Length: 380
Image (cartoon, rainbow, N blue to C red):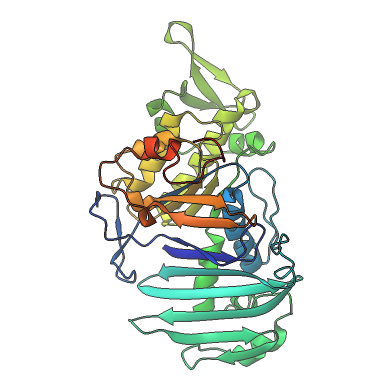
């Protein structure tokens, strides 16, 4: 379960900025909250939506989380739109260009809270650390400064030997997990289960989606949002065709490569979302509204915010321009965040809860009127 993600000195993020998913003390609806004893308030939100003007840092936030996953997994797995984000410092201030880029995360596995972070400079690991919080007080599992390692007595295993195998450009967490370290493998697996979806459909998606039969829940979802898709059939040559409602209600079957880009992207989103709901994993979507009707976007949001569909603590972090979602009855005020560029060109990331609002306020109107910031200059 994701409690917090932080980024510092990466692209437009200069000073450290925190995205927090622990529920606040607001007296908003509590139906969708996920109980979590390891969270300081006893609960986390199932989803957050990040709003902001174009170029304000929304994509950079999702990309920062993707960079951290790639570092930990020692992979270059691209997002759905083919992007390969890499760590890079804030370049609009010379004082920061030589500093490392930092990434931190607080997460819960089982009943234990973990705090993990690393700093990267010029492709090498400048520092790395991991703490666990089985109770109120934390205890060190390991710390790293360059190639100098310190281990806490709570971390079992052949840690010294593994540290000697750890390359300067590789996280110790990755080296240990690849060697089968039991404690650290659990933490690395959390990163491996993170799903990232970009704003455009990968051109290879139709062939991949057509190869296997879709989850029945995907077809039911498409029916519920009136996407025109009413079923599917398997082809003798392999793969599937989706059924569309034709004249007189007759089903017309189309190959996947004839589906619209919006339909293909929705299929990708649903494939990842239902997998996350089953496993209780996080999903990061850059541009939830890209190519989707507002009702479809809200239906995706509801999958996470409804306890009946989200029984395992899955979470959604999504960027969007769709202000209609602000009026959704399943959305709490502590689930709305904003990105805004300051005069130095650096991104400020802040939650709606730092602003004065009341339960029942028209958040969409307030945002469009510029009361919360994070809109193009001059738009209000």
